[in-house]
Image 1 (cartoon, rainbow, N blue to C red):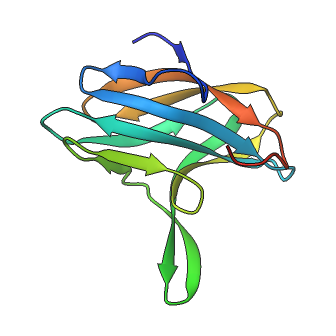
Image 2: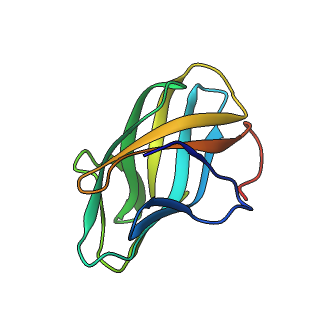
Length: 137
């Protein structure tokens, strides 16, 4: 599949028939970490799973989820990935599921991101980056 670009104002990005990416965006911090948020929409009759992600902008990308344990919020690694249910969606957003970027090498205006799915295969896209301190769109 070819690369594609996205921003807050563009139409949803096709991944493959039945699966698309919406609202992809990244936020960086001065501490050389960041997060990628997006929505995966699956209109297919079978579930898929986001298995991993990578970018040349960061040393590593991990899948995380913020969960409440009692009265404490904890960020947990989700190495098993994120299931995208058949006919459903999964939202990666602040305070929930997200892609965590570690050892960010620079602060680009956009980053190239590769997503690896169990059934859909590989998708490459360009994600706009909000600079440190910017408000969440």
